[in-house]
Amino acid sequence: MRKNYRISDIKDYINWVYFFYAWSVPEHSDEGQRLYADAQKVLQRLQPYTKIQTAVEILPAWSEGDDIFVQKTYLCECGLTHAYGDPIRIPMLRQQVPGADGYCLCMSDFIRPASLLKSDKIGVFATSVHVGGYDTSDDDDYRRMLLQTLSDRLAEAGAERLHEEVRTTIWGYAPHEHLTIDELHREAFQGIRPAVGYPCLPDISVNFIIDEIIDFKSIGVTLTEHAMMQPHASVSGFMISLPQARYFSVGAIDDTQIADYARRRNTSFEEIKKYLRG
Image (cartoon, rainbow, N blue to C red; front, side, top):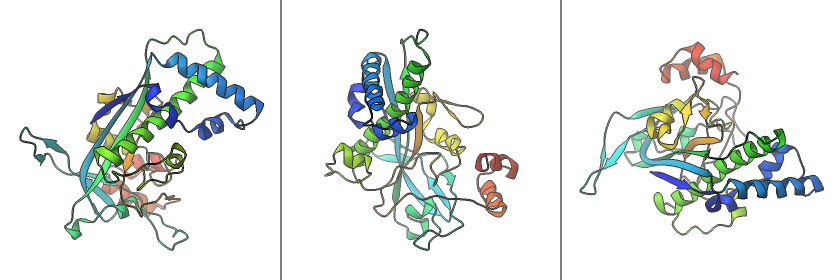
């Protein structure tokens, strides 16, 4: 599914806390208030030129050990959903040091294992901000940085709005949800939305797998050889519905796990190591 937003559609979903954090400016200081006023002017100026493009696929999924598998599907003219192609393997990383609850968590723990013979689903998503027809050549460094930090926030706001629609209608596992913007920012909703680069999903080369699932080019995104998304103001990741799912940090991993992860990713130890250790 592809969905486009305008700034007016998602402006209320912007989390300004992270905007001020990016600038290292206290929100309620005089400098912070001037920065906020400038940001509002830039958003108004960008409105006619900016499109936030999003993609999400809600797919059958199951886990096997530390791997998540997804099955691509299509809807035929008769209204039935059919699987096509081979299942896509998404290897994940497990903590090597237990958390406070004594468990070593892995993202695959939040998807039903194949052995249960009971279906599960996962959301695979991406959002990207595209500014077209807006000339920045006359802007100074301050204005260009303001544009970049606002674009980053708009990409995240697009993901927030999309996730809300996924929960309530597209996937519909929380149809009666009615949360305030503050509650959304506090993640009071059911499930989680880990993005590539989060501590629980530290390997950005997972972007290559996500691209295979949802086709980044369909929303104007390309990947560099190092799996970085272009435009820079882009976000990708997963949506998990399990109420008990939570964020965690994989933390440090040793060469034995890197070797196992490389095997599951069907790549070399050296290739995967560069993504995991800088």
